[in-house]
Length: 353
Image 1 (tube, rainbow, N blue to C red):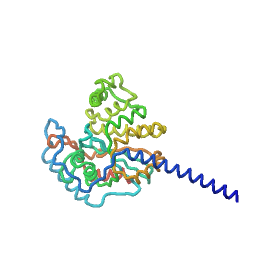
Image 2 (cartoon, helix red, strand yellow):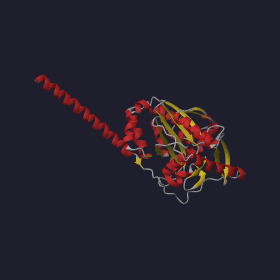
Image 3 (tube, helix red, strand yellow):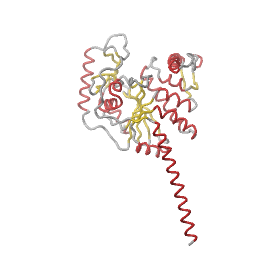
Image 4 (cartoon, one colour):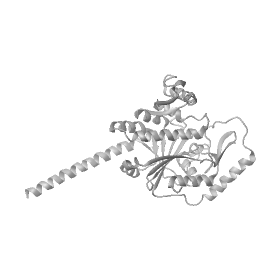
């Protein structure tokens, strides 16, 4: 009898410890989840009548016939894409984007857009940059650059525009602030990158701008041309690197730089200590806005140890040989072959290539 009672007491203690552990872990999760900003999407986004003027460039617009052909392709693409969106329950798609507004109260344009696809069937995560200058049809607005859709109607219109033009289902979104990006890299101890003298020249201009915004000395953290080569960069320097677009390759190379830096950050985050992870979350989460519900977030956290072992790949839309640089209304745009890029994106995300 005494032995049976002792076993029951032991079981009760073990259950109590497990219960306390579960409650503690859940409370910790609730704490971190509550630090993020949460916003639900609407099926009918409220459209802004006007948005801040975008930069224009000197020069001649593309021939009228080319512009008409592109706009006709947009109509045909939407008509062809009225069918059900490509979907696979083993693939979880999250749009990660940052905006070009330095004002927390202003929408700005979606400056960087990366579609992150978690493919549980093939054990891989793919980061696909969506070029911001792709000329698309924005529902309720008309034809414009892809990055204008966020300024016109927020995350709801941005996701709707991508889905309708590129024919893929996007499950959720995460919006990040530029300055959180800097903080995360600093908490991780910086990153090593190979940079050229030309890149340093452009980076210093962005570093100077960031110093002005943050009230730092004008020349703080600027690099010398002699620093060209493999260098250890701070968060501010890495952000400046990611923003480079006025060199050979322009916007295409810019998106490649962004994916490279995200890949390095992902690898470094794998080896974070608990203390570093706490600092990272405290710095990052308040500057994130997402529509990932609590239940889905718990599932992602529970499988995080498995996800961290997945292969990390990167790509870009439009793919090579399927686009043309154009000018419409004095603005640089990218006219793309929509059927080719819709298929390419489905292949990238769902592994049918």
